[in-house]
Image 1 (cartoon, rainbow, N blue to C red):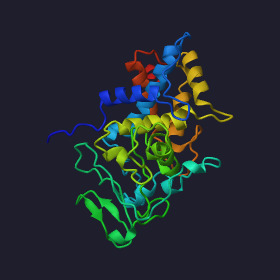
Image 2: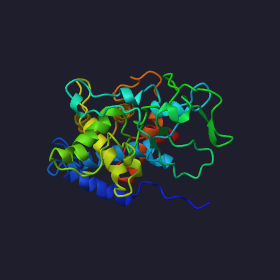
Image 3: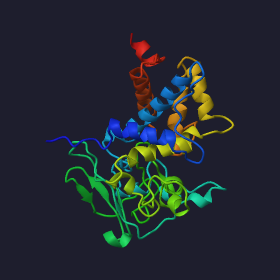
Length: 317
C-alpha cells in the first residue's frame, strides 16, 4: 500500500520553531541558548533535543497528532480511554489556584472525531471520538482488532470507570501532547481566539480551542499547528517548571555543564511531560515509557553531534 506521509515534517518543525523563538508566550519564548557563554549554544541544542525526543515518543512514532488509544484495561482497549489514559482524567485537569481564568469548560454536547494515524498498521485502533452519550445508546465498548470495529457487547470501563465519551474531548494532541482543560484554555488565551478577542497578538485568531480542541490536528489552514501546540506546551509547562526540588532551566544548564553525563535529567523531564511531575510516578497507574524517552534523547543528542554519556551503549562494548 501507499505510505501516507507523517503529519510531522522537518520543514514544519523548522518554521514552527522560528515562530516560537520570536513569539512571546506570557513573556517566554522557546529557549535556544545563550550567545555569550561557553556552553550557550549547547544549552539550546539540548533543549531542542529534549523537545524532539519527547515528541517522537508522544506522537511522531505513532504517525498521529491525536493521542493513540493504548491503555489496556481488563485485557481490552476501552473506547472511553478518550476520557483519560494512564490514571488521568482529562476533563478534571483544571487550572491551579490563581490561574482559573485560563481554563476551558466541559461542554457535554461537543462532538470531535480524531484524525486517524498515518501508520500502515491494520490493527491500529480507531481514532478517539467524543460526543453526547445519546449518540451511541448511552455507552461505549472496546476496540476489536479482529473485526477492526468497536465491539459493543456492553459498556466497557476505562481505568477510572468511565463508560461513555460525553464531554471527553480533551485527549492529547500535538507533537508534545497538550491534554486537559487548563492546557487547551491557555493555548486559546495566548495564541487563539481569546487572545484576538482581547486585542492581544494571536497566531490563530480564528480558532477557539475551547470550542474546537480537535483543530490542533485537523485544521488544514494551519498544518504547523500540531508542532506549535507542542512547543507552546514545552514553553508553558516544561521550560517554566520550577519547584523547590527541580527547576527545568537550572537542571538543563547543570546537565550540559556536567558534560551531558547525568541522564536522570531526562527521566525527570519525561515525568513532567507525561505526568506533570519531575519525580514519577505521581499518577497512580501511569505509564511513562521512560526507557524509550531516554533512548530517543541520547540518539537525538548524538545526531546533533554531542558527546553523551550513554551507559547502555558502553555496557555493550
